Length: 159
Image 1 (cartoon, rainbow, N blue to C red):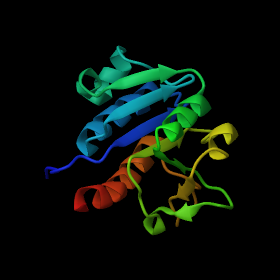
Image 2 (image 1 turned 120 degrees about the vertical axis):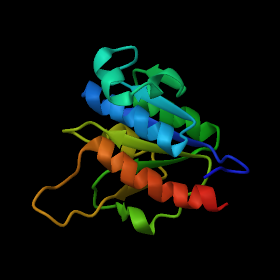
Image 3 (image 1 turned 45 degrees about the vertical axis):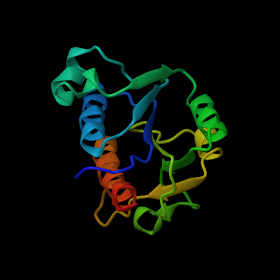
Image 4 (image 1 turned 30 degrees about the vertical axis):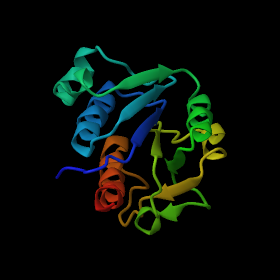
């Protein structure tokens, strides 16, 4: 599937600790046509063998940038009129299927244990979540990114 006009879609990784998850995020970002990944805080950065093992080379062509403070990336993108949506379970969260994507868009995914930081949540334009129907409260962060990323791309590719 090719876009006639590519709508900007960015990913912000807020302290993703697992290098394998970072690699998976790069591979999924490639599949989704993500414009750029912002690796924030302790998020691993290429080059690294554990990232390469799961990214399968995608880390070599996906544009990325590291920033220590995730909230600074959010503020910078918002000044550039990028709509920022965080993937997190909160009382204010909207189910991802009810969310109306607006572009340019940046999706924030959070730490495997702590989720998206409060400093980022208070700056996000919208907070969305994945409904859980089993005993576990959440999915792996890279898997969650893939599910929500494809849902966002339904809107992105339909324009």
